[in-house]
Amino acid sequence: MTPLKSEDWRDASLSSRLGYAAGSLDRMPVQRMDPAFIAAEAARPDRRVVVFSGDAPLITAEGDCLFRPEMAEALGTATHELYLGRQSDLPVFARGIEPEPDAGEPSHGVASDLRMLAIEGSLDVSHVALLGLAKSLLSWHRRHGFCANCGARSEPVHGGWRRDCPSCNTEHFPRVDPVAIMLVTDGDRCLLGRQPRFATGSYSCLAGFIEPGETAENAVRREVMEEAGVQVGEVRFLASQAWPFPSSLMIGCHGNALSTAITIDRDELEDARWFPREELVQMIAGTHREGLKVPPGISIASGMLRHWAGTD
Ligand SMILES: [Zn+2]
Image (cartoon, rainbow, N blue to C red; front, side):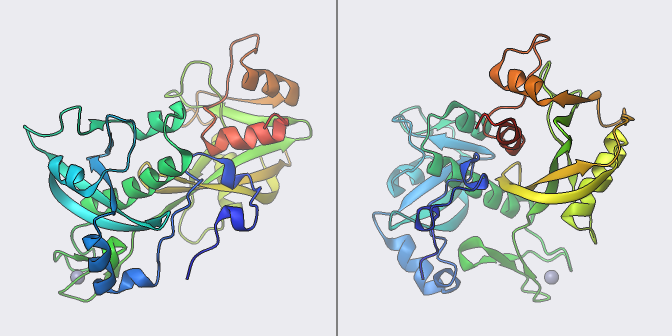
């Protein structure tokens, strides 16, 4: 059972063109439930391993993120070993390590930063997607070692795609945190805001976590009202992006504004404004007269803004 890949249906969606999205991994969702299958995959000498020290992916001296098994083992003691699936028919595992003092010299692996790797474009995009998945899954295991129901230590099963509690039999699945992120427009202008932590001059789409009992559409309306005091009517899905910091799912929507007066929530935003489309084009091109700009090209905010501006 091989899942369809983007090339099978010529996926031209915006989602498929965003950072961390171009995965060609077959997750082997049925086979991975069989411990004998996982053991056979782990015994294959041609398997590949991505290695993380904490949240930092390790990169080979050749600039690759896929280690041969013996190289991965030399980097440090494994805290977690997870089965990701197959890429180009090779089994791929994720290994979380505790670095040892005498290991990890530059010839073996250099700690890197996943955001920087994605922005720089030095790695193949499918490898960036693979690292994003590995980072989210390893992070979940590090933070969820104990059963949330009874407090007993839980055990990974299915190659690491589930944790089971031996005490109360609760099954725990890797968490994904949905975030609504929205391009709100009023005719030919769009609503952007900036948080104090943003780079100087940078404006982006508003966003917020979706709450229990809430649709993505209502989360869009609530967040925009909370942060900017603008009422939103019709909301349509545009694109989504797995965002591995640590495990968000960004759900990108377009919202039609029903009101235009802005009331800024100063706890959330430093500024919010309506930007005419031609001004947005300048921000994307880096030619804005005030030096204003939009986020880097790998983010869904950037993807949605470029799409709307007609510059993608
Ligand atoms: Zn339990």
